[in-house]
Length: 285
Image (cartoon, rainbow, N blue to C red):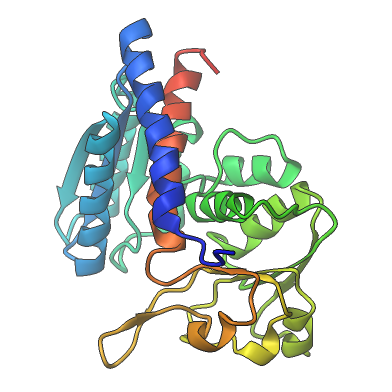
């Protein structure tokens, strides 16, 4: 049995479906999904992410609008641009690439994006909807993780699910999604006692803490599904996850590699949110 969960394979399936849907929206209704991406400053990692997002938009037939703003853009200038894009009918999704320069208040920027165009699902209104299970958009990384778990054929209902990490972007929404699928969920973090024992009891283990090779074989249950959200660059320049892959892989039932696991899914779920936003705007969803 193939135990490696390939984000590239699952992501390609998702994108093929989105492309099909985009073609039919354009042909049947004249709707052309549009995503606006704003980047402030010249952070190299952010520039790579933005390029990848643009490429993905082209691949599925979306219109991509990029707004590159200088490092010393004021918060007011950024909020003005968001205000313009909120009213622009061609733009269905707005994404501001994080992190932002220190002089700009991240939360104020997130709050300024119209909830109907918030395809990252970071706006408090969308976060609240996830909490009650009545949402339009899901945060891209947790949504991608759910697709990867589903690709294994493993039933989430009734399973012990452990999420290591409690960030607003991954850990907290991840726990909510697993809970909505009837998983029994434990969230662990830096203050958790008996972390090893809790992880070793997980049927499904999702790790997002940003510490290279932190999860070792003795923390993993035989046959568990292990999803590694972390991506860290070692001094050698090599990329690795939060899970010590080589020692955990023989023990896991299914496991994601880094790179090539969760990463490709995140942008695919962003595309999924954007097409949903276009459909909601045109009362097709």
